[in-house]
Amino acid sequence: MKYPSQAVAKPYFVAAIALFIVQIAFGLILGMQYVVGDFLFPEIPFNVARMVHTNLLIVWLLFGFFGAAYYLVPEEAQRDLYSPKLATILFWVFLVAGGLTVLGYLLVPYATLAEITGNRFFPTMGREFLEQPTITKIGIVIVALGFLYNISMTVLSGRKTVVNVVLLSGLIGLALFFLFAFYNPVNLVDDKYYWWWVVHLWVEGVWELILGAILAYVLIKTTGVDREVIEKWLYIIIAMTLITGIIGTGHHYYWIGTPVYWQWWGSIFSALEPIPFFMMTVFAFNMVNQRRRDHPNKAAVLWAMGTAVMAFLGAGVWGFLHTLSPVNFYTHGTQITAAHGHMAFYGAYVMIVLTIISYAWPKMHGREAANPRAQVVEMWSFWLMSVSMVFITLFLTAAGVLQVWMQRYSETPEPFMVVQEKIALFYWMREAAGVVFMVGLLVYVASFFVKPGAAEAPAAAEAQA
Amino acid sequence: MVIDPEKQERRIAVAAQTLYLVNLMLLPGLAFLVLLGLLAVYRRSDSALVRNHLAQAVGVSAVGGALIVVVLGLIYLQGGAGPYAWLWGILYFTFVHTSLIFIGVVGFVKALNGHEFVFPVVGRWFRL
Image (cartoon, rainbow over all chains, first blue to last red; front, side):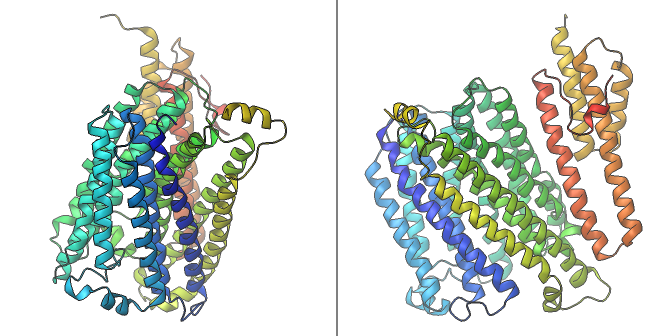
C-alpha cells in the first residue's frame, strides 16, 4: 500500500462482506419460502425477506464500490486521500443508517415504518428496490455527496488517469441517477418510466463504468501490461456500454404504457448490450495472455477473469435471452428474469468487489499477496460460489421456461399458483445450490484467517517485513 | 507499400477467428460461407499460424453447428414442441453456444498475439 490513507477502505470491505453474508442468509430464507410458504411466517414474511435480500445487495455493493474507490483513487492520483476522517465518518453514518433501515424492515410492519419515518410529508416509499424510508434516502444522498467530494478533491489535485476519471464518472452517475428515487409522480406510467432511470441506468449504465475501471486497475497491477493499452480498451468498453445501455432502457418500457416505438428501440439497443460484456471478456483474456509478470496474487487474477466471464454470461447471454420484445411479451416477470438477475449481479458486481478486495486486502496488510494456502482456500470459494451460481441460474431458467409455457404460452393457461406447485422441484434444487453458495461464501471468509504452512511461514514473514 | 509478412499472417489468423465468432453471434451461416472462402484462398499458405487458425475455425464451426442443429433436431423429434422440449432445447443451446463462444474468445486472443491454438476435445481433428 503506497499511501496510508488507502487503509480507510478496510472497514468498507469488512462491512461489505458482513452484509453479503446476511444478504445470502435472507436469500436462503426466501428460497425456502418458495417451497414452504409459511416458513418463518409471521416473523419474516416473504415481502420483507425479499426487501432485505435486494436492499442489502445494493447496500453492500455500494460499500464495496466506496471501499474500492478509497483504495485505488489515491494510488492512481499519486497522493493521499483528501480527507480520511470524512471517509471514516461517512462509513459509520452509512452503516448505522443501513442497519437501522434493515431493522425497521424486520421489526415493524412496512406501513408503520412509513408512518414513523414521516413518509407522508415526502412520499418515496413502496417501490421495488427503493423501499427505503425517505429519511434513509436523504442519508444515502448525504453520504454519496460527501464521498464524491472526498474522491473528487483527491482526483482533481492529483494525477488524472483514465481509470480514475472513468471511476469518478461512474460514481457521479450513480449519485445523480439515485436522485430519481425522490421523484414519485402520481401517474403510474410516469412513475415506472423514471423508476427505471435509477434501476436500469445504475446496473446497465453507470455501474458498468465502475466495474470497467476497477477491472482495468486490477489488470494493470497484476499483468504489468502497458497502462496505455488497457486504457484504450477501457475507453471502447465504456463507450459501447453507454451507447447500448442508455437507449437499452427501452427494454423495460415494453409493457408499462409507453409509446410503441420503445418496442423497436428497446429491442435493437438492448440486443447490442452484450457487446461491452463480450469485449470485457476479450479484454481480460487478452491482457492476461500478454502479461509481463507473474503476479503472486493468483486469486485476484482468478476473480478478475471470473468477473469478465460471468458478467458476459449473466448480463450478456441471459440478458439477451429475454430482451427482444416478442420474447419478452411471454417472459417478463417470470423466473427467467430472476435467473438473469442472479447471475448478472453476481458476475458483474459481486465478483468485481471480491476482485478488488482480493487484490487490496493483502496490500493493506503489508503483503503482495495472501499466503499460498490462503489463496488455495480462496480459489475454492471462487469455484464453489461460481459453480453454484451457474446452477442457481440453470434451475431458475428451467423453472422460468416451464412457467412461461404453462402460464402464458399454452392454449389453456394455468393459474400462477398452480404453476408454482408444478415447478417446485426446480425451486428445491435452487435452494440446494443456494446452500452450496453460502458454504462457498463462508469458505471465502475463512480464507482470510488461513495461516501459512510450516514451509511457507519464514518466506511469508520475510515478505511482510 | 510493403506489408510485414508476420503482420499479414496474424491478420488472416485473426480474420478466421473473428469469422468463427461472428458466425456464432451475428451472422450464422453467412459468416461461415465467408470463412470457407478464406479457407479456399489460404489453405495452402506457407504460414503454420494461418493454416492452424483456418483449420480450427472452420472445423470447430462445422462441429459446433452440427452439435446445435442435430441435437436440437433430436430434442424436437423426441418431445415435439412441448414444454420439456423447450426446456431442454433452451438449456442445451445456451450451454453449447456459450461454451463455443468462450473457447472462440481464447482462440481469438491467441490469434491476436500470433500464437497457434487448438480447440479442446475436437480441435485435434482439424489440421491443414
